[in-house]
Amino acid sequence: MATMQRRTINPSFLSLYIALGLLFACASAKVFFEERFEDGWENRWVKSEWKKDENTAGEWNYTSGKWNGNPDDKGIQTSEDYRFYAISAEFPEFSNKDNTLVFQFSVKHEQKLDCGGGYMKLLSGDVDQKKFGGDTPYSIMFGPDICGYTTKKVHAILTYNGTNHLNKKEVPCETDQLTHVYTFVLRPDATYTILIDNVEKQTGSLYSDWDLLPPKQIKDPEAKKPEDWDDKEFIPDPEDKKPEGYDDIPKEIPDPDAKKPEDWDDEEDGEWTAPTIPNPEYKGPWKAKKIKNPNYKGKWKAPMIDNPDFKDDPELYVFPNLKYVGIELWQVKSGTLFDNVLITDDPDYAKKLAEETWGQQKDAEKTAFEEAEKKREEEEAKADPVDSDADDDDDADDAESEADSKADSKDDVDAEEEDSVKVKSHLTLQFGFDQDLQLSNNVL
Ligand SMILES: *[C@@H]1O[C@H](CO)[C@@H](O)[C@H](O)[C@H]1NC(C)=O
Ligand SMILES: *[C@@H]1O[C@H](CO)[C@@H](O)[C@H](O)[C@H]1NC(C)=O
View 1 (spheres, rainbow, N blue to C red):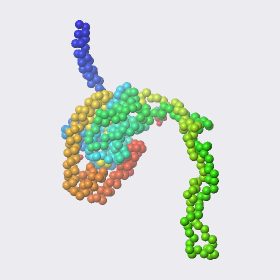
View 2 (view 1 turned 90 degrees about the vertical axis):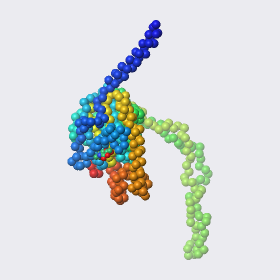
View 3 (view 1 turned 30 degrees about the vertical axis):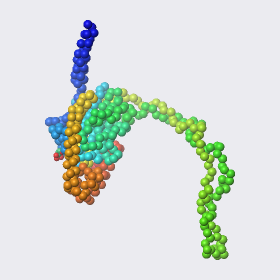
View 4 (view 1 turned 90 degrees about the horizontal axis):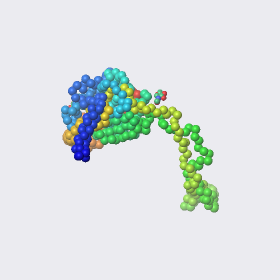
């Protein structure tokens, strides 16, 4: 009887438990911010005035783009070349202390991006959203960055104690012209995970993959190499002896092929001597051959000691007053489309959202893209039947059908200008964020 009961009751208990568990899991997912860019999005986002007075502030286009999996699912897309973009949204301030933080969004580079960012930022404290720009301090900067052939990576920059720290482990980003979902997960045990399209690309610890704190251990600065430490890997062979007569071999010998010229007159020209040539037998000063040193101890290394400057911070992962999410970009070529921005404490919820949006639409988007590409190629071939092959080889112009109508010489000048901008914008990303705008300004 008892076993019967167990058999009949337990499974239903179990399913009830699972149902409750799921309900609880869903109910417990805290969503701090979710933006699918549906009606009313403009009330939630503030376009910055940054760069407006210099006429270099770009306009956002509310669109699903040239190819998509659902024309009604719109996002915001950069729409003007050589422009700065800055837009942000506010959410109720929160701290991620003791909680997981998930930051996720989708991005599509329709322009076949060859240099530019597709990242977003989380900002803390009070920010004047109308003035939000490249100088505004941020807490987290996350997302893809592409520049030329060398930079194709996912940034995960964390601001700690007022300094921006780049992630040290390289995470390659997507480089095609389709939508991809980027997810950053930060956990209270100071571990993190970066996902693209719900697939884990990198995971690790804040301690090892960023230089937020001074190193835990350092080489002992007091340590000295012991006097008798033998760090010569090879030594002259003591058994090897100089062959007899070695030093008598001359460096140069008279050229045996040289002949006294027929018109040589010993009386007038003096006694003829053959010119000398290098002696093939001569091997230079004698050196004993090298052998492995039997006393070799390896390269000397100072022992590691605890770094007196290291002080652990158990709240290394904490951003105590997150309050805004923003996009701040400089784009040489526009066409980057952002959508489905999410800030939550629940990686499963983020995964589900990605599946419901990107996951549902990715196949249709790919088909639409392939059709658009086919159409573009056909039109290009029609417009420029002779030159079309050459154009295909030219990376910079490939995605730029408008460029086709320009004269060739003009194209060259544009490409050169573009390159210099590329290099600068690439450098700024490598060497610090304060200089970013100045460099860009110089170029403009
Ligand atoms: C906005 O995007 C759509 C779809 O790509 C495009 O047809 C339209 O020209 C764009 N508008 C602007 C102002 O760029
Ligand atoms: C924070 O920055 C200040 C000033 O740069 C520095 O003196 C201090 O040691 C830093 N603290 C930590 C925990 O890194």
